[in-house]
Length: 126
Image (cartoon, rainbow, N blue to C red; front, top):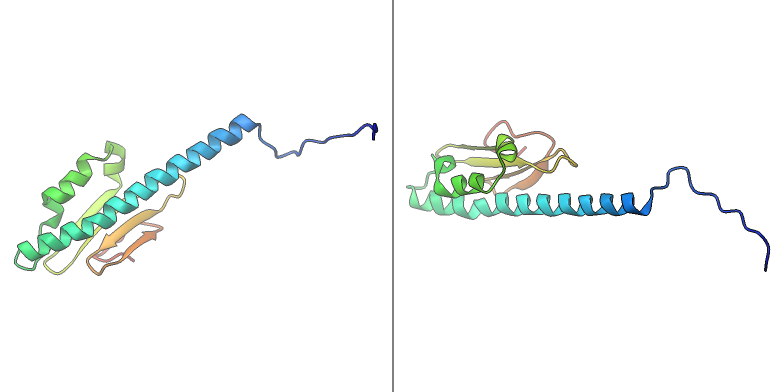
């Protein structure tokens, strides 16, 4: 009891305010990414509805109101990293997640919804 104590601060420690700011930024990025994943995955239902009403074809789905609505709800920066391609038999749509991950979220006509390191090059997420 009553013995002096030496307390050493770790070299890599952060002030609480910086820790809190980082935590909030991480949570905000996670919320943005979750919203992007949900929005892109929800386009699948729109694409299937489009397919059924368009003589069993995805052709021009990327010009449809459902896809256009997605773009209008995004910032101009996000629109630059969002893409959609379609054909009669298939479609793929994707967008970049937050800068924190650098990944893309992709959904396609095969029912796949995954994260990718780079945008898809064909009509499937791979």
